[in-house]
Image (cartoon, rainbow, N blue to C red; front, side, top):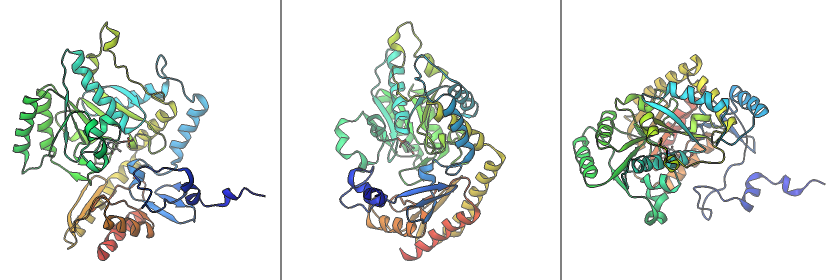
Length: 428
Ligand SMILES: *Cc1c(COP(=O)(O)O)cnc(C)c1O
């Protein structure tokens, strides 16, 4: 006789022992059991398919189970599965460092490996603090944007400004001063505020999501304004940390959002699309100047920070294959095509009476509903359920509806995302 447990659906068995992230288990709806994925689609255990309209949190940009990346990872796994990265090195890490330095903006010179976005930020903040410490300075303050999101570990959480995540931990965080994102209207005031903060505090770093704040609701800000803020911070000796975990690898149009800046960041954090959703891996890259501040005859001036799975060869192999695809003719064509379709959709939808601020940048499209709602309010929930019923995975952020589809999404699937969004507008 078969084990009866095995006959129960995943969603039923899930209830027994699993604690889900970002979930209030008392009131949350049950999760979907997902059994298969390919291209821009995922299938649940009842056989229903969903278009992955946000590429599973901006990771699976080359499509789920992309055969080229799977093959590269499989070959790597059969040759060298894993070796610790202290005292050892290996080809996938070396090749990835070479490839990244070639495409990263400006002055990036060194690659430090971590295993997820939050820990990439954590390493960046620690690098910045120790950079000043090694130079004999104690700089205890970090500057960050209001409503930024940088992850859920303590340093990353400190830099994040979304209080529904931070509430219980507020008293235990690093010292962070928040400034509004720059717009054409407020830039002068923001620069004034920044000058004052830099003069009155010992600022080690300025942490920001360049051009687009993802978790805040795909909010865009002024490139020129950010550029000026970076210049002011760098002049005061604060290291500028670009969190490109969401924007990196083509989302905003260029390979990296920081390419649009004339003042290059000192440190860049990467994850998410780095490995195309196939493996947890992240990078904290930095300029030669940052790296050089850790060189000393004193051992303790080195960066004593590591994760067991640093530079995992299989993750590096996934990243190498992904970067090859990123700038292949086929994907470049798709990136441009989606950006163009988003622009056309933006023009069409922006005069809709229920829409305010329709916008697009690269493969990111977002609109705000003209009605207000809570981040976790009932309208948001209703929208999400409606999208899922129609077989489209879109997760509104408060009253912001957005899509960030995989580059390999088909024309028909992309049009279905647009028409589903338009349909939902009729019922809100
Ligand atoms: C997702 C994200 C993070 C955190 O990455 P995790 O891998 O979830 O820890 C940090 N910053 C930005 C901009 C992100 O989008």
